[in-house]
Length: 319
Image (tube, rainbow, N blue to C red):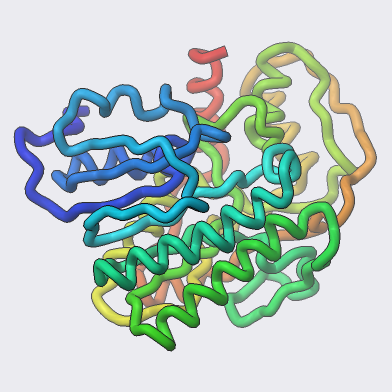
């Protein structure tokens, strides 16, 4: 694909976490549309390899910086994606994770207020914790342990949502909140421990596939292309919509079903092994996407089987 037009003619758009899994795909799209994209990343979980193909283009810039430090730039839109999103990384330094979610959001909202930019928060289905309502609508307040090992991420994202709503109510900042459900696809970090990449890497390397718990817990998996379509539809929605919107694929699969699909698609001889379930790991997760359908006209189109095939091919090339 020819990513870049001969001259940029669009908006000035800031993408925090722009060298990460989701952020790098977003940068690709925005640059291709002719926007001037400012990618901010501290490379804790992101990688320069994810965006190095954009470095020669005049409508793409990188700043290596933590968003806990205020940023002074002029922009029209802000996608706030910066934050480690897998338990392995966000539990590595839980205090810094909380700071990234809360202080980072505070800094980006301050920038949006000053520049009158529209700002989108990449929030998470972890706001629902270990849900007792299934599937989860945006009106559900969740079931989150405020002092557990996952709390630095879950409660950090919930606090960020609070800031976004209050900046909208108090200062009139044009905010968007998307709650992202499990997303997968090319450029996932092979070492971050997320279930799709974990299973695929273990299968391709011929190692045992590790399931935590008995494999009955469920997740809903959204392919990265669908997720980005929803993210951009929310940012570009022509109206006021500060309330959260679930963006995810409502197809629901157990961990055992996912492992069996990966084994079949990779042709591996790997065996499934079971380990104890980590503290506060959700038993079920599935988005109610009626709001996204009604407000944005969005719903996912890529089924898990197709998305897994694409993702496995990516990992075959990079392993």
